[in-house]
Length: 194
Image (cartoon, rainbow, N blue to C red):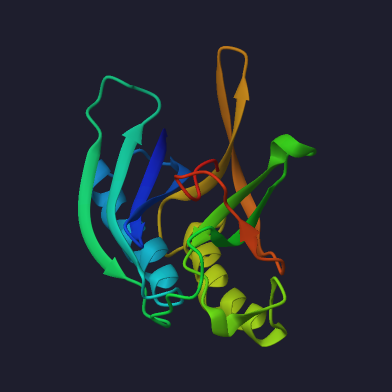
């Protein structure tokens, strides 16, 4: 078993947007290159099919948390959002995916901020009912199918990282849900912090 930190980087209106994920490689057999290709296929692709065309994902960095001396692997990609090419939406607006684990309390929950909201899916600061159902079924559900606990699509498991004194614990994600209220990411690196 090995623990990994994945950093997905993109550009929206020339601004860097990043998302940090934590994954467990249960059998430890996946190489960092294989993991990056898996993330591109089963995480970035379902997201890019449903987000603003102004966002272009540019790289996937895989770092080993168990042995920091191992060199990270960086896969260069060019995956553009396919939904709408909409310049009216600020880059700070995000889809917020709630991550739940078996761990009780705030240490058992996480969030993933995904930039690239489209104007047709929102109204008054929330996703429209139709937009919410569409994004849950076409973006979030495929992510959970790939990286949930009983996935046969990918060998990797999405986790929430809990910091402990002198280390960390990764808790596998057991549920993912798109929040109905649109998120607002104030930091420059949109999406960092899962």
